Length: 77
Image 1: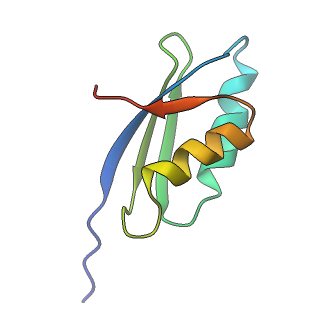
Image 2 (image 1 turned 30 degrees about the vertical axis):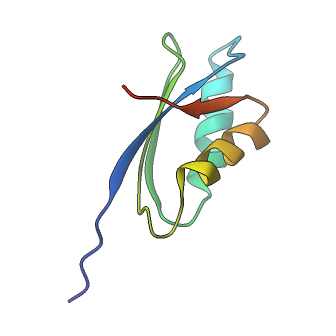
């Protein structure tokens, strides 16, 4: 039996202008292998990602959000 340890990483993104931004980010980040779930909070510009840290790093998540067109960085809370 294989046990995968997942972790939650929270990013702060910039440049949200409309709710469709949420879908763009969720789609881009959700494509990464090892990502279990993505939830974008439009009002607070928070991106919560549940993922396997061995398969995808915080830098990979930041790059995926950037590919969707929004700068981001890991947040402490």
